Image 1: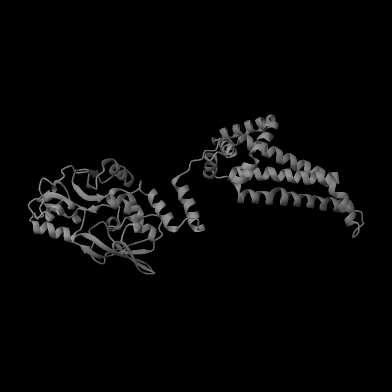
Image 2: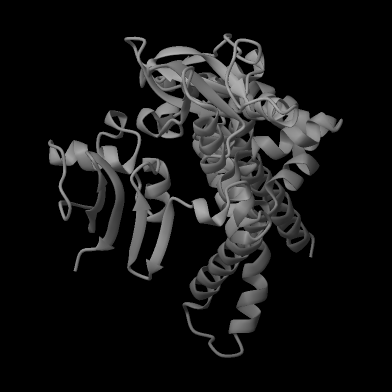
Length: 425
């Protein structure tokens, strides 16, 4: 009975070491850091152990191998007599001892595999952080107790790693891809709403998209001329109810300033004509380069406290106009954009009507594409068409990519207005 008790004790000890090994390796740094920030000293100990795991894993392997050897020695002597007595009821030949030994070996091996290996490791994989926090303190004591053996084997391991030019310590760097993957898993599980997941995913794209993907292009900018009559100014405001308008002299390249519609409204309420004069003209125009990322643009707006910015290219030519709302729409999308302003309209299960100015990243999401080729060469789906055609398009011109047909169905002069996307049969 003493031998059987020893076997059970070895199985329990082996299970603890197996659980500790898997838990330390599988415990997620983000969850442990949250617990550590809340004041958990054991969580911080697990983090410290993960940064330098060499001594810990050396101790684990020493302990597990020693237990396995000891279990084999004790197990055969512990179970063989009982198994021999049981087998003797069915067989009493000359091979009784050999048969009993084989059956004893199989039983001991099965017990260790099931209760000292598979079951504890499954438990550790299910809740790695909790298991790691529970066993981190006793594992540190065992490491100290076996420190001479640990030092020798750990040094030899580090030596071989240096010879193979491999890192000897674990380096945990949480990347954008890791965060997005975690959020995607949360969205699939239901702990994170799909809308929240899309919003956070869009935020991470702010650094990869430039102002050209969200700005109002030059040919669509509505501006006032200094020489315009009151009726023309009034009609422009009625047709295009914006908060701010650019003010130019004859053309857009001769920009004079910006005007707030509220100032024009005050003039009208006073009975004066709706004209632009120097009293209401703000000559402090905010400029941004078109190559600026959306993230940098948001920071620039925060510092400048301006409602809109004029976007210029490297030659100083005005190429567009961008507002804070445009930047917010780039990642908040349907939360602040009315349905009648949607750039992508699903016609049926197999086709989409897409505005030419739609950012290429939005099109990739809708079509479930990883990415478009040479995406650094363009910002919009219209730019993709131009890039692939290598010429100005005509109606019904199309491009086939990734199993989809991108067909130009509407043009405004030389600008692509709408594209019909459908799968290629």
